[in-house]
Length: 131
Image (cartoon, rainbow, N blue to C red; front, side, top):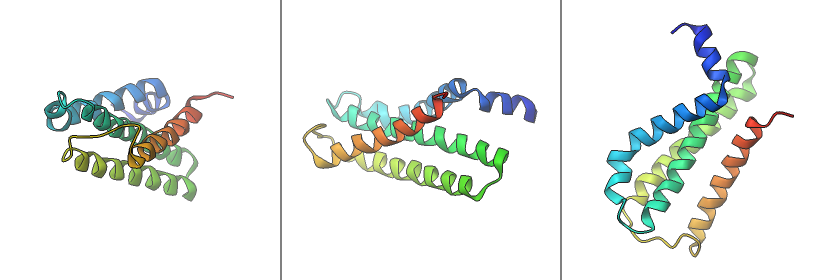
């Protein structure tokens, strides 16, 4: 795969998002998600973190590509921020596998998780929009 075809793939955001979704879900499904599939609402909590990982990895890849186009220090900082968010979501996902009882809309920590997912989702939506 030469650089031109990679760049064409990286510029096609829907295909890139699908590739990230398949990669993240494929790598997390057997070791993390499948053992908890029948634990009631616990799987929803794990999927909440998984979707945060998907969006943050997607945004990190886009910011790396933007850095190579613009070569600004702001894009490096943005890339690092999205990578830190990805690592934080991975740590929270691994921690969430230890507890099996979650009340999605009753716990303040669950509400904050939903708010962080909303924040990263809005950032991804802003990138997809064409003004």
